Amino acid sequence: MGLYINYLLIMALLNISTILGHNVCPSSQCGNVSVHYPFNLEHETPSASIKCTYFNLICNKTSGTTIFHLPPAGHFYVQKINYTQQYIQLYDPRNCLTKRLFDLSLPVPSPFKTNYENYTLYVCPPDLAMGSILCLSNSTNITVVASGSFKDDNKCEPTHYRLLPVHEDNAFSLTWDSNGCANCDDHDSGGWGAKIIGKIVTVALTLPGLIIMSLSCCSLFCFHLLRLMRGRNVVEAEAAEVHLPSSTTGLDESKIVGCTELVIVSEGEQGCKSKMCSICLEAYSEKEKVSVISKCGHCFHANCVHQWLGKNATCPVCRTSLL
Ligand SMILES: *[C@@H]1O[C@H](CO)[C@@H](O)[C@H](O)[C@H]1NC(C)=O
Ligand SMILES: *[C@@H]1O[C@H](CO)[C@@H](O)[C@H](O)[C@H]1NC(C)=O
Ligand SMILES: *[C@@H]1O[C@H](CO)[C@@H](O)[C@H](O)[C@H]1NC(C)=O
Ligand SMILES: *[C@@H]1O[C@H](CO)[C@@H](O)[C@H](O)[C@H]1NC(C)=O
Ligand SMILES: *[C@@H]1O[C@H](CO)[C@@H](O)[C@H](O)[C@H]1NC(C)=O
Ligand SMILES: *[C@@H]1O[C@H](CO)[C@@H](O)[C@H](O)[C@H]1NC(C)=O
Image 1 (cartoon, helix red, strand yellow):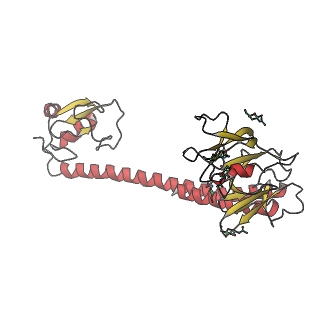
Image 2 (tube, helix red, strand yellow):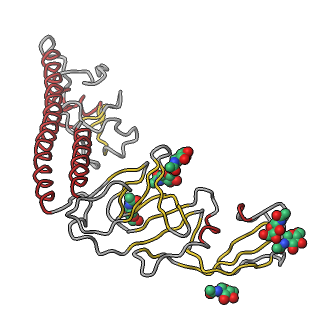
Image 3 (spheres, protein in one colour):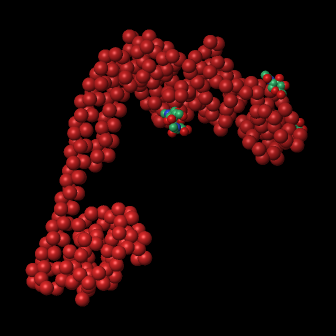
């Protein structure tokens, strides 16, 4: 219950911050990609008060894909954007990234950077099973790309050397290195005004949540306490019940000692199945010495069971007669 309320609370906070962010700094969602500074969706212009450089992403709402246009290479699809680490991961929808990267040239100066590596393209006979670039291969020759040295039995011929952005699994990353935008550093806090409002809203939302949470914790605790007390009453009532009609059925001290043995809770040969004494309802500590009724193997605090057996000749748990 506490967890559920917490969840609702977080969802509410997220929603509010998105709305707040939206008013000041654009923040939107396209498919599974969340878009905010330094990106924005085409047609969603930030308010005029924000003098920040944004990069347009195109959202195809039908397919839920986010597209980044990088002339002259063209459209790349966005796999993910990590705003903490400041990188955008792009892939080629036609699964021909290597070829596409031949045409990628980031403008100088560019806010985006990528790591380059010296790649070699090889043309190989078609029976080579290694990762080939399908879009550059045909039935007579397949093309393989490799960075560094490509170990092969010389059946492949290198055809191109090229510095290309480091890519793997049809995806590559661009990092950006902006020192932020004065009033748009943090997509969900927005400008100064929004920050204040955000704080007020946060407090307003958190406070009742905290109260509800502590109430639910409290009631849980009370419930537990009640159960514990009821358990104690039952035992006491039972003790009274048994005690009333037959006050003489208790065992004397020597018999009590005779029908119980002392063991350490966790080490007794039979061990104690229960982790707490059913008479006083208190948990045992791990190395505690307790009394086991030899006949049925139930454990209790020595004091508790001695008091009980002084008045009753049965095991308090299973009622086995000890006479
Ligand atoms: C959006 O995606 C759908 C499905 O992939 C495609 O048919 C459509 O042409 C795309 N629209 C644009 C504007 O790219
Ligand atoms: C987002 O969706 C695209 C395909 O639409 C997928 O390739 C990508 O892995 C997804 N990203 C995350 C973080 O789920
Ligand atoms: C961004 O990267 C960091 C570190 O690798 C990671 O902890 C975080 O979850 C990532 N964020 C997203 C939205 O993928
Ligand atoms: C890439 O590596 C090849 C072979 O090692 C070399 O001949 C070529 O000059 C390198 N190209 C660049 C741009 O470093
Ligand atoms: C197959 O690809 C090789 C290397 O790219 C090219 O030289 C050759 O002409 C192509 N053959 C056909 C039939 O397209
Ligand atoms: C394509 O394959 C044929 C036959 O395997 C070969 O003779 C030719 O040299 C290959 N073309 C290239 C560009 O390697």
